[in-house]
Length: 295
Image (cartoon, rainbow, N blue to C red; front, top):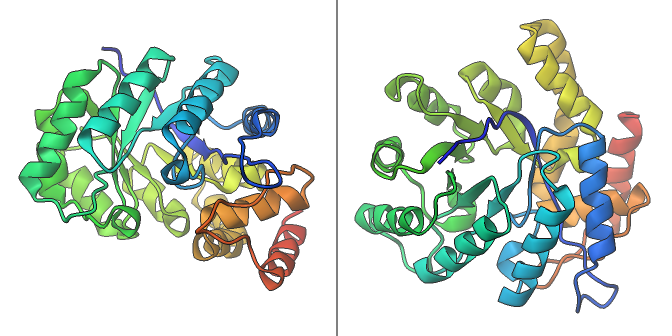
């Protein structure tokens, strides 16, 4: 197994739907992927929260996964979220993604029941044993209902050979500091919380997993470049300029805000799939104002 170099701005993709929501709009998905890559993101991450992977049938999930991997065509690394409610279903998705060329698969320990640490470890081990592709462990209690401790994350990292990176989305910067300290700098970790982007890079994050490049790629990339250049003043100014929009995206919900923002910029991706509502008119007005300020 060769672990790809994943760094920088990792752009979440949306899953566009037809006007009635019944079908995947693959041409729109292709345009959204091209837009992200052409604007300079360092990697693409389909089928996560922004991509509404939890709301797709197995056939739809396969369709989006296969199309995304073929369309990216190795122009940048692709990180496919394969999380599902059962280990067997997550294994199926992981194998499918691997067979179609995923560079990394991302795994969230999603479950209806609260899982014990032993069950979470067994979940990752089963997926790891089923594929040769590197795994990004994803800690996001807001969506999974499970908050993995630093001890558990390090145990999984040290026990499952192809768990080679960690995405941290609790919104607690101390988690990243503890991963860096207790992992002795050997655990590549990535920020998944928009308002922590600057602090996460300061803590040693290798990259920032975010939906924001769908709307403001230049600012996201400029922030990363300023961090690489050790230009703290520029990084702070760039971060604070985009922070109101980053917070709005988080509070408004990623599928609703990003699809509304894409519509405002001329790329129609349909509405989110129920039970998620599209962004309300007042939210669209606010989003339009935020985007106008960042032009």
